[in-house]
Length: 349
Image (cartoon, rainbow, N blue to C red):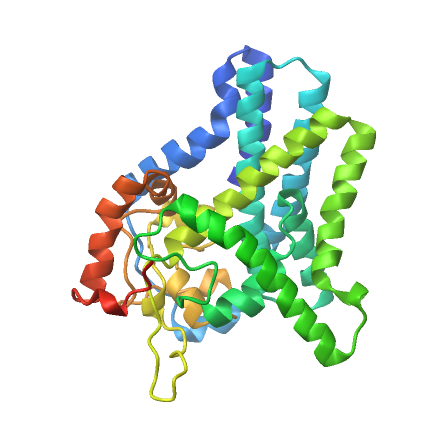
């Protein structure tokens, strides 16, 4: 189901062109925020785990990697064809908004694909991750997520771990610049350690792909296409940060006797076993196991009983997160229950 997301805008564009109905330009957000939650509710959760004896076989199965890599060309097709549509056809304001939102959601999904690919070693995987990140103009995520977030997760030092009582807007304003700053500092440290020149900075390489894309779009389609591209990019990386906001809200690793934070465990990430949304997101919602075992491929991620559980899949939780009173009424109580009422142990504002 992971490929259904980039296919939705293409299906929507085709149906809108044939029928003339504006609704179909919004097929992608309807799929993500209406159909997926309904299917999650109907199908329910899946707490089953692959046996340990099967993990190595699952990890080596190229079929799962195909479904992951196939997202990237589809993503670029949606982006380029969508921007071409916007600049060659008079769609009107409503259709334009629907198409740009749809492209942004696909770019947000692209960051999720880059997240999974980026945990694999090798230059091919690195470049594939950068290609998946370029449409969202978020290439630094590859550095910050692997060498920053996974090291500092669920601590006050991590810009990508949300705090109890922090709204999504407050988190966004802290996380977006904080992640860029962290990625830059991490690369500067690496370059100094290895004695490499500034042009070896991986952030510059990944950002240059987005700049090249912007320049190409301006030459090919003009300024309006560039403006719409940037809008969908903001939607894309804001969707990522909504997911980041959900995944570690209020959770905190405790200090050990030597003053260091305990190693990341399953209880430091919110988990969700809702089957349909997990299939759509390449099992991203089994986030507790991902942080406990960062190298484990998505198809082998497990449900862990000790992990705190979200009440719904990410699609529903994203909507809740955009309304702070509603989010806090649902999640603050769960943070308190997780720490048995001792909120001094939580990561809070």
